[in-house]
Length: 385
Image (cartoon, rainbow, N blue to C red; front, side, top):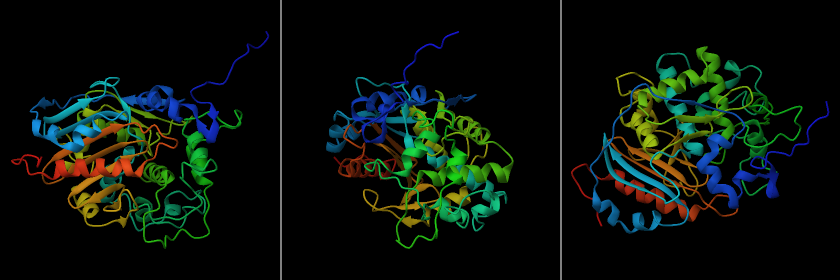
């Protein structure tokens, strides 16, 4: 039988600038709104019980000049503010909606704070131990790094994540995540094989600032599986149940089924807010189940490595961004989520930056400050308009 002529999948094809087409500016909004169905491989989980949310809208939040501006710009997708089970503010773009999942990119990394914190408290992981003690086959890029260094983005190696550089290591990693077509279809890259090959003559970070690398999160995931004897998916299922998510927790995987915990999750805005409630509840779920560690979160709030703009007022600590009593994280292309552990207020902002490299520091900085101002407010106080 003669073979049938085919063409490369257009969404995943590599185009100008060594980008996959779905991440190019002209296709990016569709890509961020639909990554869970565009990636080559993915899986999803549903919670058994849902945390109900009730509207108690605080209209004065809408009177913030920054809120009015950043919920009307063309890049905007969604914004929500919750406290406990109450929605204080919620708005969506015309082409988005309350039940639509959105790529949260690197906000996915925060799952490692919960998982690692729990295992540290149980004595399964020792943060002073080296990656090579848990994964002997890891390459020189991580072998001598301690788990604490990896958690704090405090490792130096050959992995580069400058999106404007078409030669950046990140783009090979994107192939391993199943976010683009393989260069050699007969030898498709996978997560574990890729990160095992990362090299470094010296992993010590002497810059004084966090060295942000997606690969760090995937290294931690490998360590977690080796130390616990459990698959990452089992931890993620527990987190989804504990958060009481209403919709599906979608996450992309590689060809071997390894979840892309560095940035592959897709959630609705409400469900990301529900998920961040786990940090306010100190790692406890809606039914009291434990999926994190309050002790570890306290350590997270009091430690970390200084960050560069637009996060210059923060520290990177145990796979969270820390400022005062707030725990947060950003995502490539315009997402941000923050929880204030004392006020209990959580803010989520989704957008899709449609410039050349999906990176605009001048845009994200004001959004971070806007959300921080809102979550800082005491529950009995109104926003300062």
